[in-house]
Amino acid sequence: MLTGSNPYPTNWLIDASVLQMDNRLYVVGSGTTSSGSPPSLVIAPLSAPYTVSAPSTVISTPTLSWET
Image 1 (tube, rainbow, N blue to C red):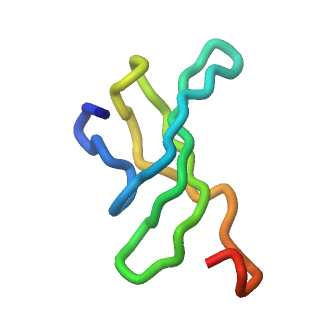
Image 2 (image 1 turned 60 degrees about the horizontal axis):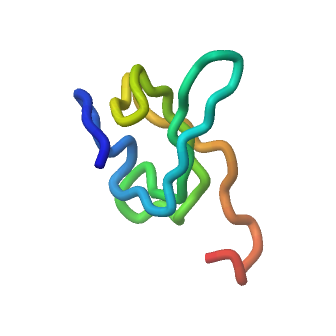
């Protein structure tokens, strides 16, 4: 479970993992950024292992028909 002012950085988020890089924490998972958008790989910064601190960013979007 995530917490914060925007605990679920997208409309939905599944298969989330915590990434630690350069002493910073991020949540990475499959989700949507808006209603009707395809599932994409998203990332959002964390201020603690379970607290989202800013909106998510799409880092990969499906481009082939079999990916959706």
